[in-house]
Amino acid sequence: TEKLITVDTGSQTLYAWEGGQIINQTKVSTGMRYTPTVKGDFKIWHKNPLQNMKGSYPPYEPYSLKNVPNVMFFSGDYAIHGTYWHAKFGSRASHGCVNVPVEFSKWLFDWAPKGTRVLVF
Image 1 (cartoon, rainbow, N blue to C red):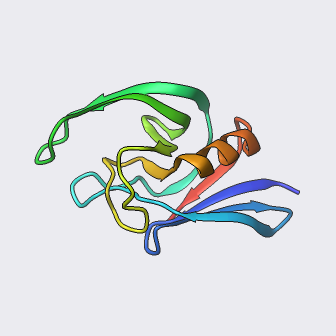
Image 2 (cartoon, rainbow, N blue to C red):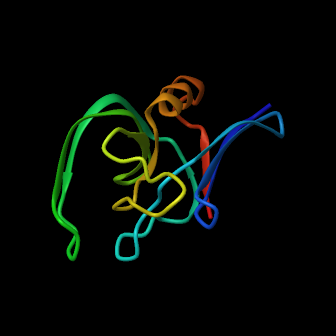
Image 3 (cartoon, rainbow, N blue to C red):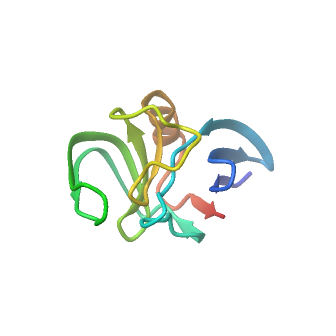
């Protein structure tokens, strides 16, 4: 009956599991070459319905994004969140976070409570 989120960085796919069954899935964008997504076994430790995000990770251009939706932190500053500024799901396009389509991010945010296990491989 445990809820589980798995992120397959090879296939760029996120799976939502409940009761040992996949109940939903989506293509995602994980970290690019110089900003890879952290791999391991984590738990959602904080959730924000909306958050501004900014960063600078050379050689990539700095970014500043307003109102990033459905943010779920799982390891330090690494988060699963909705992404409205690109549609490159299925390919690496982030600075380390797991980018998901906004509509799916809302479903996931509502479905996964704080403490939900996140397995990234």
